[in-house]
Length: 201
Image 1: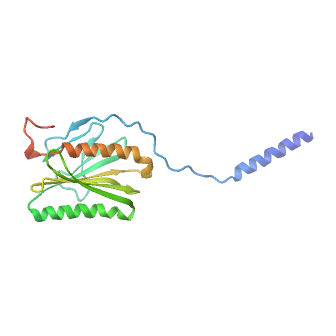
Image 2: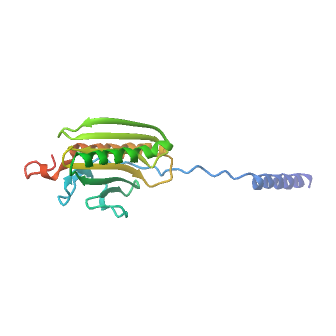
């Protein structure tokens, strides 16, 4: 009888402790992704430029209120990410300078949350000038770039992830899309460069 009483008392104490224990929610995580092997296809010839983009992404029109013709998004459904592409036909050197300054200002807006912004200027195999900005920290866009021939064409791209997950958890997916963005940059051709003999090279 005494044993039964002690067992019941122990059970009540155990239940009381378990009921009063403070609930600690788990931190928000990112579903484990199996990133597919890279493969690419060419963008349509309806654009004034052509590039190779991931076969695991789809091309969408930019539907924002500021969008212009030939602005598109390379959207990754599985990653909830995209590479936002804007394009301008250059009229003169003054307009080129304005476009370069605007791109710099858009990147600089990330300074509030960024741990660092690393910029590098490179030239593609086809002779285009490229400015690449890699942004670290809890920022909405981790990788941005501009590509121009300095006379006729100007293209800007920015990588975005549409998730509240911290960027350190997103690192493998961010690196994956960055590599695709670099492939896009190196494969980029303006329409006046394209002929039946060299498309997609």
